Each structure stands twice: as structure tokens, then as C-alpha cells.
Figure: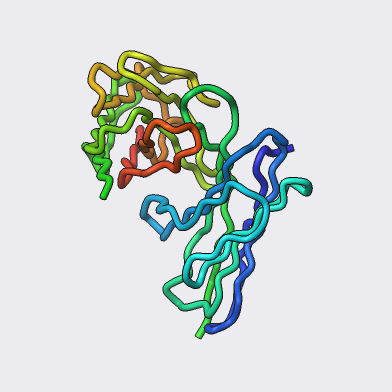
Length: 113
Length: 113
């Protein structure tokens, strides 16, 4: 079983719709959860992070965390063509001083006109 | 803004060569990381460092070594490059707290022929 799992997609949504991206993880001791966006040929850039159960909103983005179900999601409201990218879920695992992140393989989002 | 700079955007090396990938960050971050990214496999951690002269193996350290002589600089070394090390290499840094997000450099696309 992969430590962090995402559906590879592509997930296709029309412009203006809500895109829902999902991620599950296997380590119950995971404490921190991150969403990165990666455009083709570029490096990942941080969109949001969440540490506690529930929802966290930032502009058009909402991260949702359910530790009991080991599930984290990202909602993108009013999707725009510029949101078309691969979205990586990352989970902080392990102990020690460094925030070692384990990444899912990403979900490719296509926002259509 | 955090800046993580990787010395080369594209690199072509021959099998058996010793290869150095350099990474510098300008935000006095404690932690630095080297990942490689391959289609279908996502981002995989090679090595990380949480302090000067300290290093820890990630998930796929075989065939690689690292050096961190100064806080701002983290080097990845391929002792004898092989074709299966053709990949996108991403350096990242994060501040001290364990659950901090990573900030990525622009990546180095390495081709080993």
C-alpha cells in the first residue's frame, strides 16, 4: 500500500465549477498535510497546509482534513483555466527535527472552457 | 520570499561520470532536501539534512551521496552516474519547526547517456 494515494486523473471540470481533489494516507501518526500545485515543467509550489481536523479556507481554496478516515481533500471553487495543473498531496511523516514530506503521485486537473 | 537556487536547469552527463548538483537557499533554513521526480512515481526523497554536516537517508539513497558544509548549501553527488538516474532533481528547504512546508528550487533535469 502506498503511503500517500491520489487518483492520477485527469480530472476534468468546466470553468466556474468546483474541483474536488482527494488524498488518503496510511500513517496514522501523520501530523501535517500540504497541497502543492505543479505546472508542467515547473517545480511544486505550496497552495495550502492543514494541521487540524476540519476545514481551512484561503480564497478559492479549501482544504479538508479527516484524521479518523485518514483523508485530506482540496476544493477549488470557481475553477479557472489557470488552475489546470497537477496537484500533489504531501504528508509529514516520521519523527525527528526535519519535516520530511511524503508525496502522492498527483492528480492532474483540467479546467475546460 | 524564500529563494532556493539550483545551479543548473539542464544537465547531460555520460554513464560513469561523477555528477554534482548544487543547491543554495537564502532564508537561513535549517532543513534541506533532495528529491527526484519521475513520471508515475512522483517525488521520492533521496537525502535530507537538518543541520550543517548532518545528513539522513531518505527513501532511495542508493547511488547518491550528499554534502552540507555550510548551512545555505546542500549538494547531491552521483558517484558514478547511470542511465536509471536520468530524472528531474528537486532541491527544497524548510525552516526549523518539524511541520513546516517545503520550498522548492526550479529543478535540474539530468540526462545520463
